[in-house]
Length: 440
Image (cartoon, rainbow, N blue to C red):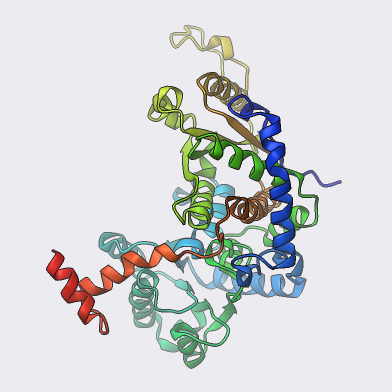
C-alpha cells in the first residue's frame, strides 16, 4: 500500500485543546461538502478539486513529448510567468534538483524563470546569458497582457527570433494560455506555437498540476506522472488529515495566533514555502481576516529569526515539514585533534544531527509558547511532493470556508496595478493619472 504524508497536531495543544479542534471539525467537514457540491463562494474556480484524477495518460505523454523536444534542442528553456504561473513549477524543480546543479554540466535543458519581476538588471543578465545559446520559451499567461510576463516575453521573443529566425523560434516557443481568447492565444494561433490550455476554472495558485507547472517540471527532467499520482493519493483518500490541519490552524487563529510560519529543515523546500505563502495568503487574506503566512529555513534562520520566534510576541504558530529520510548519506568523520569538539558525533550521519536539531527546536519553541503542527514526508520525491501539493490545496479551500471568506478570488491584487498604470500613463487611465499626480 502506498504511504502517504502524515500530520500530527499534538504539539499545538496547550494553547488550544483537543476540544477546540473538535469544535471546528464539523465546519471543516461542511466545507468539504461545500467544495464537493460546488455550492460555495468561488465555485466557478473548483477545477483543481478533481484535476489529478482527471488528467489522462495521453495528456501527460503529450506534455512529456513536448518537454523532450525542448530538452533536445535547447540549452536553456525560460519559463515566463508570475505568481501561480511560476511558483509551483519552481517549488517542485528546486525540491528535486541537485543543490548545485547550476554549477554542473546539464543533462538536457536548464529551466530558467522570467516574468516574475520587473528587475531591469535581472532581465539584462538573463539576455546576456542567452547570447548565442540555444534556448526556448514557455510563456504562461491566460491573457497575455499581465505586465511582468508580457515585458519578459516581448524581450525574449525578439531575442530568440533574432538569433534563430522567426520560423525556428516558433518551434521553440510554447504558449500556455486561455483556450479561446486573449492576446497570447491570438499570437499563438497566428505564429503557430504549440499550446496548452489553462482551464478557466483553475486559478493560478492552484494550477501547478496543469500544464502550467507540469511542462516546466518535465523539461527539468522530473517524473510528472509520479507527481500527479501522488496528488491522486490524497484526492481519493480520506480527508482526516485535511480536516485536522484546517481545524487546528483555525482554532489557533481564534486563540490569537495570527501568523503561521511554515518551517523546513531541508534547504530544497525553500520555494515550496514560497508557493505555500501565495496559496494561503491570496486565498485567506481578505475581508479584514486571515492568518499571515510566513516561512523560515532552519537551521539557517535559527541564527537570524530564532530569537524572535523563541521569545517575541506570542502571536505565532509553526507548521513544520519534516522529511523522514534523506536521499543521500554523509557520515561525520573522527578527527585526532578534535579541536572543534565534534568527535562526540563522529560516525553519525549528517541527517541524524539535523533531525536532533529539528526535534530540539520544536521542543524549545513549544516550551516558549509556539504551538507546532508537524507534516511528515517519507522522502523528498515526486510522489510525496504531489501528495503535499494537493493536501495544501484542498486544506486551503477548507480552511478558507471555515474562516468564512471566498478562498478563490483575489480582489485586492488589482489596487497596485491601477496605480502603476496611471503612473505610466496607460491609455484609458487619464483621469486616474491626473488624480494620482495631484496626490504626489
